[in-house]
Length: 414
Image: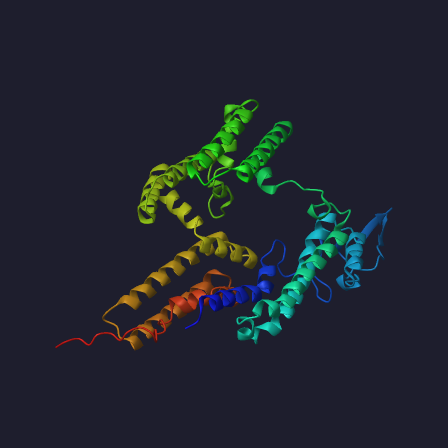
């Protein structure tokens, strides 16, 4: 039997060996769009035409400026890459957007390389003295993280942004306050900042574990914020501000449906009320569906339900890249849903044996593929969708693998 201490050490090592993956999950740590040794997207300033004509009196004179090519930029070291980007006219914000993911990706790869030798020696690091054996990796990763921070600090010093202490505007606050006149918006932003500071200080200094008392303290601070806002916002501005700070304000950003301000206000208010009630998931879903049908009408409520579906939003983004009209993507989404429902029916149909069931699933799999081809712009669209949805396709249109640990089904008695 494995001792608890060994299990704890095993879990600790597993966490340690995931360091490289954790690095990928940090902000701006995605794969670089363009880094030394690779091509990448050309900034707007670098993607102009290679030859232009300019009018010089009655005769056009050809511009003999050499065409720009991305490979002309020195990509090593990082400083030369940065300076090259600025030299061709990239704004500082764009320079940061290109370089920061590239640097983070390079360091995440180095972290993965550090952890790789430990993977094949798992048990050596879960028995005493495992802490001493893991320490070199922990120290190396910590040093790598500090080195990355120094590189980023030096690279972006003077460009503006978070790494040199020049904070940019909070995009969330900008979305909440953008409808206000500039001076009023600045006052509201200051009020929010003060409230955030007071709330953080309250949580930092709160003593004890009385959840009710903590909640009352936060509520009192919210009351102070409301009073502050009431001193300079009109009732209409205050209502719009509350609407934009709702947990359901993301509905404003949905594609695939356009809600008027009146509809948006009603929908958010209904969702907030239902969220505050102690309901089970099924009951809340049913109540919400009925309430939205009453507020928007059945057809508009169905459109909203579809727009809230994450798979539908992904499909719209794909259709946009494929230059497919939204109406066609919507039709394909309906076909996708129908195919999934028919697949579930086939899986549960007691009249089908496994070979017949698999044949039915294969038929549905082929049908949804032809629908993708018809609605998403031909073979290219079908191939793009099938690559993106491979996991979903395998789950929906294949018989589930038998569980080797499941007990055998009871033999029916005559």
